[in-house]
Length: 220
Length: 108
Image 1: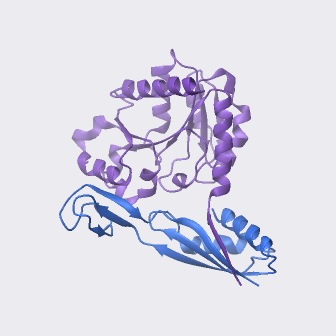
Image 2: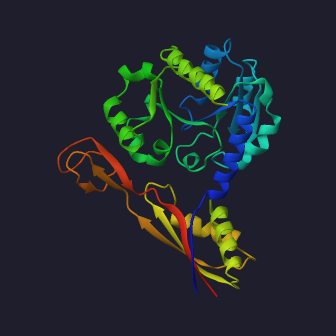
Image 3: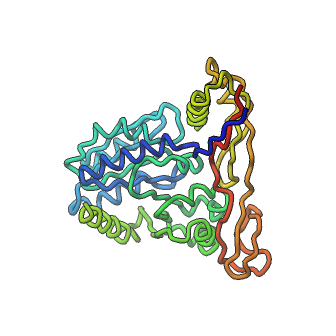
């Protein structure tokens, strides 16, 4: 006997993600999910964002890592609450992992929660975790063909950050080719070109984030 | 991901009063990052001691398809670029290949 089902495979995860978002909304916290391959600059971007916004907004961080707390330690050294999720070998965060971590985040004391996903350019794309924005960080040394080779990661994001832009003169990276690949998959993506090392472009990104926090609060 | 497939299958099988699930039909777009063999491998492990044990997963693959805004042609991505092979336009959009769902199950 054939039984029709027609159900999206990750619908259970998506339901938990909605619960996470509702919890963040209750506390007036804007959540941002930062995804990228290893070494693209996720932790560096969080550090640069803290430095740019620390005086204006109260930040918190959740850090997904397979085994260590190296990244959470770096962020905590900036004086903001940083919670570590060790995924125990899993290559991405899912909604349930964030749900379990959120009670240890001081949600009443922060305005913006930056979630650093596990370094991986394949799996995190499939798992919503309940943040208001999904961000992918691409970096110049990774090469300009990534949107063509890893389309799912570029499809579901709201923001694209192109990091290490200071290396552009030294590497064969065709910025137009890269951007076209992203535009086809995701025409509405908001793009920032930055260098966490030189600080170029960080104020534009930080300004955009501050605007989203203000807007999120106004909508409550 | 495989766990999620199993949960969906067991829920629908129980609702249908099934004793055993023999086949699971999935539709997976090529823009979804899923490897058929891995999903079957993990499914075999996860489904042990359930009514879906040793069910065969059948993957219906939907190839990625792009449409050109300018000449309206549809074409498959060649893995290197997203430029329209007909008119050379770069104004193209994804129209198929993002599917990711359980379609039906065969039960006894």
